[in-house]
Structure formats: structure tokens, C-alpha cells
Amino acid sequence: MMALNKKGSRRITVDGIGYWWRIRRKPSYMQALCWTPMTYAVEAANGSQSGTTLIVTSGQAHPSNWVGVEAEPIRPAHVVASIREAREQGWDPTRAGSPFQLDRSAGFIAQP
Image (cartoon, rainbow, N blue to C red):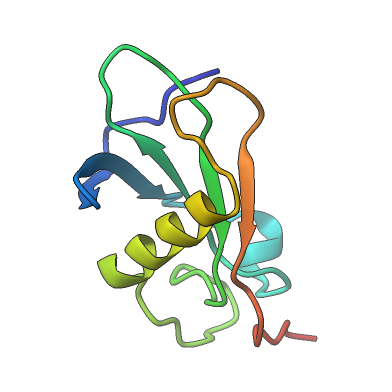
């Protein structure tokens, strides 16, 4: 499992546990056309031990989309709520394994 790139990552503490979160700077092709919503990655900030990464699918367009759709920024409160929801659904950031997917994209409207 590869660790989240720290460059461009932001640190956040949720319920006493530190995490790193990061939005991909360049949108994917599907995100650039607003066919799919923006995603971001979260992982525990526990040093050398690498665990499962959380991949959150937001309900927002990527801010660097090509079609001019206005995008709301992902705020720390959204990240905190996503981490808590993923933990409730069984995400264990300290256990190695495949990325844990959390879909919070309800209400996202893809562009034609």
C-alpha cells in the first residue's frame, strides 16, 4: 500500500486521531467533464505504519473542471463527517488492505 503524498495534503484531527487528507490537484477526465464528482483521500497520520486509505466520493464538482460548473470547496467539516461515517461503516485506518470507498455523492448531477 502506498502512502498518501504529503505534498498538498492537509492534517486534521478527528476524535483525538490525526489524519492526512488530500484532493487530487488535476481532475480525472470524467471529473473534468463533470460526469463524476470529485473524490479525496484520507489516511491515518501514524508515521511509518501504512493502513487502509479512505476514498470519499463527494457530491461536488472538481474546482478545475473544464465545463465551468461552479464548485464548492471541500471544507474540513465535510472531511470530519466523512471520517466519522466511514469509521461507523467499518473503516479501520490502521489495518492494511484495499482502499475503503465512501460514497457521499447523493444529489450530484452529472453534466450531459
